[in-house]
Length: 142
Ligand code: HEM
Ligand code: HEM
Image (cartoon, rainbow, N blue to C red; front, side, top):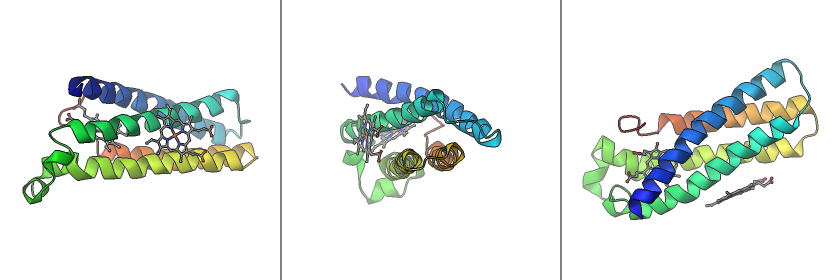
């Protein structure tokens, strides 16, 4: 089960990078060219949101079954940069990033004007994406 969740978390991470990159570029161009809020805008925003919510669920499960997660909590692990990344920084910062993305999605639904929708999505998705990318364990992945 542990290996299965590791693979799922890793696969979702690829999807996350791909979908979020396309979404941010699309929102940027749509904003610059003052385009209408299309079906594709809505689907890209929703795809990004669903992927990070799924990743949150899978990540939390992984956190409790991985030897590098909750079970490793302690002073010694905190003093080690790599162990602290898995134990604290990756989960915490990524949850904050996911919250940004969720807030962006939510706020964009509440405004009517296309430029305002794209602007909210671009801003919050970019900040969320940036935070998450800063705390991906790049030394072991991809
Ligand atoms: C969008 C958000 C996230 C992304 C893109 C992401 C991505 C990744 C990646 C790429 C790895 C390395 C996988 C590998 O070594 O094959 C990883 C490991 C891990 N992640 Fe996440 N993660 C996210 C959110 C979370 C959250 C919210 C949690 C926990 C609450 C979490 C818990 C873990 C744990 C415990 C590991 C180590 C798993 C192991 O034992 O190998 N992740 N994550
Ligand atoms: C730990 C688990 C989860 C938490 C805490 C969570 C939290 C939230 C919150 C707060 C919202 C509200 C956003 C808004 O104001 O519009 C939301 C929306 C949503 N979540 Fe999650 N979620 C979780 C897991 C999932 C999973 C596993 C999926 C599906 C694969 C999912 C799919 C969605 C979708 C599609 C929406 C937006 C619906 C819409 O308004 O169009 N979530 N979630």
